[in-house]
Structure formats: structure tokens, C-alpha cells
Length: 156
Ligand code: FES
Ligand code: FES
Image (tube, rainbow, N blue to C red; front, top):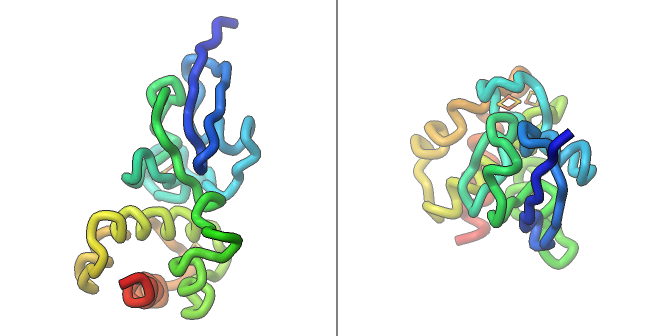
């Protein structure tokens, strides 16, 4: 089968791959690179559980083909830790009880990271809007919003 050469920077590591032309970024991350933090749920772009950062912006990795991101930088939940410490968003999600089954959590955190990349002090309304297309079946969202608020305060 024909394959495509791709070079991507994943969590600050340059990686050269030979992938199928129609392979999704989510498949590449989970199945080739064993980065299973991004979850596969709907595979249709509807739930947000597969969210990662593409050059700092949240994207649904189930909708993107890996050959399309040749040369780009990808950040997954596994790449958020700094100096061996959890990112303030990861700490706040735990402290605020914003994680229940955890299936949506990495997508929520990466979406929130994208928000904080472009707006260091988002209002509650801006936080709600940013996560509004990420689906969580467990938490009722209140704790998630509080966690993002808490993290933005710590990072200010
Ligand atoms: S698995 Fe990608 S949006 Fe649902
Ligand atoms: S914590 Fe279970 S889906 Fe969000």
C-alpha cells in the first residue's frame, strides 16, 4: 500500500513517520506513538474527546489526516507536564473534582489550554463558550468550569 512520509513535532520531539494517506492524526497518536490520552469516542468531530493542540490551537484529531499536518507541532495531554510537574490545568481538574470517568478529561484540558493560550484571564462566560462543544456525560460541567478558572488564576 502506498504510504506518505510525514515529519511532525509531537510534544517537542521531532518524529518522522511513514503513514497511510488516509490515516487520522488520532490514529497516528494512539496507535503508532502510544499517546493514548486523546480518546476516540464519536470519530465524527462531535464530542471533543480527541482534542489536541495543532500549533497551539485545539483541533479534533479524529477529523485531521496526518499527512495534512506535515511540519506542524502537535501537543497532547502527555506533553503538558513541565519539569516533571503536572500543568496547573491538570492539578486544578483533580483539586476541583472535575474528573469522574475521565473519558472527556484530556479533550477538555486541551481545549482549555487552547483558550488560555489566547486569553490568559477568560471570564466564566468565555470558559463556558470554549468548552461548549466538548461533551461530558458525568460532571455537569460546573466543576470543569471552576477548574479552568482556578488554573487561569494560578497561571496569571
Ligand atoms: S472522537 Fe473526535 S470529536 Fe469525538
Ligand atoms: S468525566 Fe466522564 S465524560 Fe466527562
